[in-house]
Amino acid sequence: MNEPLYDFPVSYTFRAYEAELEGITLPSIDPPRDLPEVKEPPIVRRLYWQQQVESERIDVRRKLALLFKEIDSIKAGVNRGTKKYKY
Image (tube, rainbow, N blue to C red; front, side, top):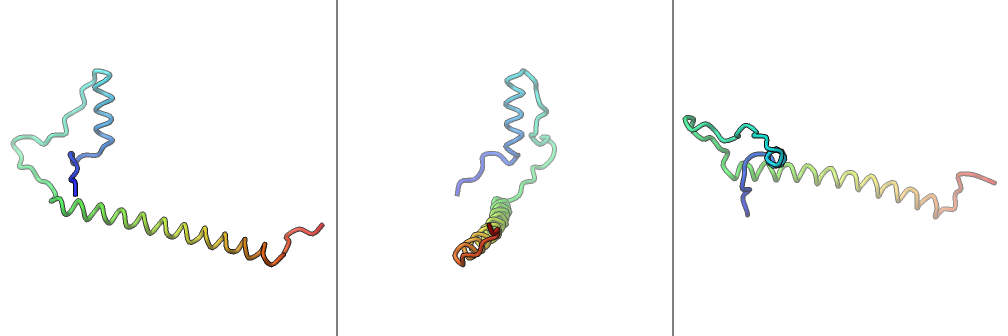
């Protein structure tokens, strides 16, 4: 699996790019050299990412189930020939 090139959010890189176009220097996000570099192992990032994706899948499944339930109730009403309004 391809590891991300950077550990910081993409939004920061986009802001840095915009600032560079305008000649503004943003503060560096590199860790100071005198401090030891602390990074999460790739497996931790991957597990967090998988957890996020799974929670989004569950949300989508729930929304789809509600949508199909609503569609089925509409079809059932139409197929029975019931009319909401009488003329």
